[in-house]
Every structure is written in structure tokens, then in C-alpha cells.
Length: 436
Image (tube, rainbow, N blue to C red):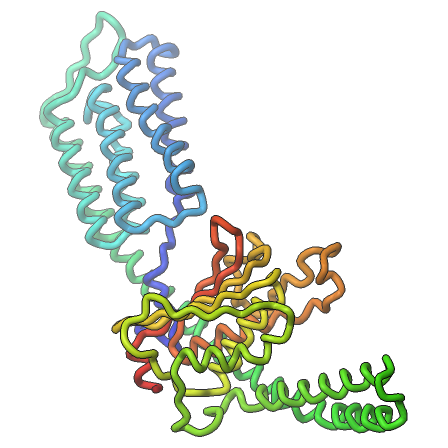
């Protein structure tokens, strides 16, 4: 399945969490520790305790290092996950070499890492893990310390029996790596297709609903807004010039006009948005969408550093203007004094970064920004914007969706040093030139 409507293929996701691998490793550490202690002190069999606990400690140390380095919520790449599975396999092989090799009944656990790889990792990684398990089993069949047993007694295994154990383990490795990986691969393909279809249908359904809501709002609110504007103009004729009432009436008239303009834009979201030949350089486009927000007491600064060649030309459309304008408006809402709009381009890509000097995105919401009906207003009930209405949480979703229609990709982040919020939009240069 290919990409649909700019959505990422589910096969590019990382379904295996680091927390899952770490939990399996902690279970192995606990089971190995209990097993070694039981054999040494419960049964009284001699075995190299120090060497065994060094290997067990390596697994525990790897888990602790991963927590400090990456965090439990990290999703490792296939290479990283395969490396961890290979480490677990080598650690288990070392323990078996110290405790009897294939004579040890726990040699069956060599199949466990292969099972994890076969169900979660690509075929190539699974093949390498299976090959490593077969090599370890072969080495253990000829080189290992004696199986821990009662002092003074000697246990002897027939060579044919050991060969049978080796053959059974190798066959198990081959069967699990081939059969299980194939079944899991088919299941992942079906899941990928279903997920991609559901995402595409969900996005189209949300867009259709928003277009319908916009048209309905423009139709239903047109008459009330006209009535408000008419009544306000009559009040203006009766109010004394320069009085507080006159100022309030002028504000009502201006805001009513702004509402009508916004509704007109929303009504045309599904259209091309004007003259198909209207094109404008990126720098002029940014200045145009920022102009309505410059009189709000915040400085909007423009930069075009790291630019190669002349500014790219964008097709003017309602969606592009509304999306960029919404992001700049949000930035001015939360900025303390300054909003930075930075444009950069080269032969491959065009990017726009919008940064405000406000408190930044709420950490608990940053991963979900762009979802519908997600809002953070007001951020501080005691703060300066405590009296602002909460909103429906559709502004960023609409802006993100409209900009993705133009071929852009959005990323939301907080700048680590200052904690300010930044929105970064990146377009492939080919998409810009096709529209320009």
C-alpha cells in the first residue's frame, strides 16, 4: 500500500516499545537469579556463581543504561531492537556455557529471543538472530562446563542424545523464524492496510464535516451579523462622538465585519481560493498573512537565513493563507513580546518556522497537537489570558490539515534552552514548484 493523502505508511512506524524489551529482560534477570541461587543453595550443586552473576549483572546494567539514555517510552528502530535481542541471546548462551551447555534443560530458552524477533522484527533481522541462535547452540554442543550435579557423582550423556538435543533446537529455531515470522508478516500487512485506510477515511471525514460546518455557519450567522451591524450603526448615530459608548459601538461594528470576513474564508475552504494564476514569493506571502496581527502589541520579526537562490513561489490559496495565518495568530496570542517567522529554502525543501517567546506548549499536549478538539486555553486560570474563551480546539487541527493539503509537514516543539514554542512547516521543493 502506498501513501494516501500524505499520511505516513503504518509500516514505517516502530511498534515495539523499549519498555517491552526491558520488561522481558527484567523477567529473564529475575528468573536467572532465582535459578542460579536455587541450584547453588537449594540443591547444593557447585557452579561458578561469580561468573554467572557477572553475566546476569550485564543484563541489569543494560536495562539501567537504556532507561537513563533513552527513557522507557522510546521506540527503538529495527536495528536497535535486533541488537538488544542479540545481546540477550549471547548472554543466555554464556550462562548455558557455564552450566552444562545443551545438557542443561534450560537450553530450550534459546528459542525465546528467536520468537521475539520473529514476531516483531523484519525478516532480515530475524534471519540473523536465528543464525546466531544456531551458532550458539552448535558451540554449546561441543564446548561447555560440566552440568552442575551432586558432589561426588558423575552424570554422563550419550553423544547421540546430545546430537538429538542440538538438532531439535536448530529445527525449532528454523521453524519459529520461518513460520512465525511469515504469519506475523502477513498480519502486519493486513494491519497496515486497515490502519492506512482508517486514517485516510478519518481525515477525509473530518475535512468534509468541517467544510459542511463552515458553510452552515456562514449561512446561519450571516443574517444575525447583519442585524448586529445595522443595530450598531443606528446606535453610533445616537452616541456622542468621542464617548466610551461610541468607542464600544465602533468596536462592535469592526468585530462584526471581521466575523463576516472569517466566515467568507471558511465557506471557501473546499475551493481553490481564487485566481489559479495568482502566485507570490514566500517572503511576501508571510508578510501578507502576518499583517492582520501586527497591531496587537506584539512584534513580528521576519528572517530568511540559510536561503539558497531566490525565494520560492507559492500558489495563493485560502487554505495556505488561513493555515499560516492561524499559526501566526496563535503565536501572537501566547507571545510575551516577540514572534519570529523564519523562512529557509534550498534545492530540495522549503521550511517556515514560527517561534514565540511565550511559555511554550504544555508538555502533556505537545505529542497530540494537531488533533481535533484539543485546546490549552486558558493555560493559567490566574494568568493574563484567564478570561479568554476556551475555544473548540479546532484551530491548530484545521491549520495543520490545510497546510498538509499543500504538501507541507508540521512539527511542534519547545525550544530546550528558552522553553518557547516553535512550529516548523517543511514542504518538498518539488511540491512548491508544482504549485508555483
